[in-house]
Image (tube, rainbow, N blue to C red; front, top):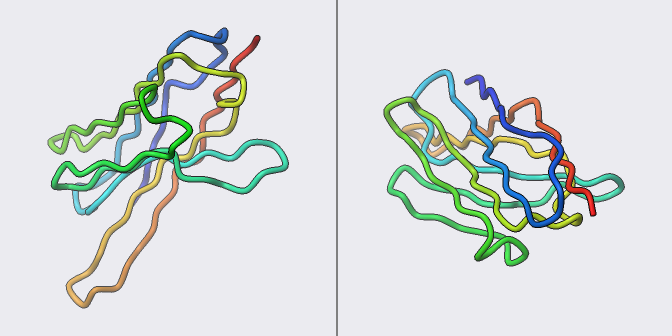
Length: 117
């Protein structure tokens, strides 16, 4: 499964960006976003399941919204009130569980988000 991201860029603090990620097939059970800042480990930002259940990191709750269009299939991350600490490479994530419950994880190439003061 290929994941192709778009929408990163440079924005001032308090601004907004919208990330998009389109999968090459619709077999994924969940999609989402992780991020990695320089010198830090990759961390969860937000995920959404096929059923529409969402999960957010505490640091982005109330500012970021994840949504999905299963017909495409595409996942979006609307990021509002951005802060300099949101600066990172954002990676799209996809998960698929096979019929024998084996889990497959997929990653996009990453898109840079930079928030200036």
